[in-house]
Amino acid sequence: MTTPDRTSPPATRTAVGHRLNRLLQGLSPREQRAVQIAAWAVGLGLLWWVGVSPAMQTLRQAKARHAALDTQLARMQQLAASAEVLRTQNATPPPSPEVALSSLQAATPTLGAGAQLGIQGDRATVTLQGTDPRALAQWLNQVRGNARLTPAQAQLQRVPGSAGWSGQIVLAGPGLGGGN
Image: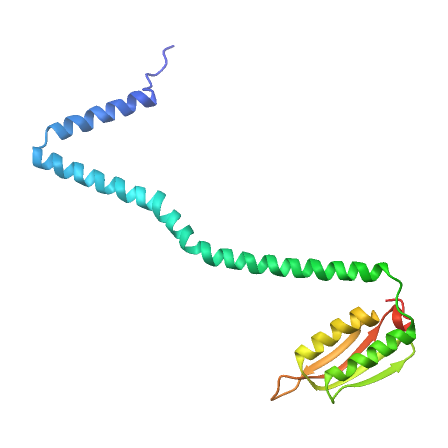
């Protein structure tokens, strides 16, 4: 049994190279020069397309990506600091109901005149009318940190024609005697 004659890849390349060389030899010097210029143009185009252009694109995007990553890093560091504060707070005993209540009462006026505070057992209910969202966020942070209270229930609606919120927030936590 004979095996079929297979030409090895380097031999195939050599044969193709010889054929191309014979073809080029058959052309006039002017045509040879044109083929060389075309081959160089294609080669330089491929080099640009594969090597240079992607690198330049990366360089163009580097500043914006760096800024985005810096912003992301700052946000992650801020979250890590918040987590550390919460971890530290949870390591200390919760405030007494009197301290939690006084912290809550001291923080509530920052919500504006439209905020009313009501206490019923181990829950505090805050009724809001047209409260600024930033003030509400700061107040929630302050109440969580100082009184160790968190929202157990919230029913908020955006006030039409303004940027304020109206509704109710029910707070609970160990400071008021709840288990949260």
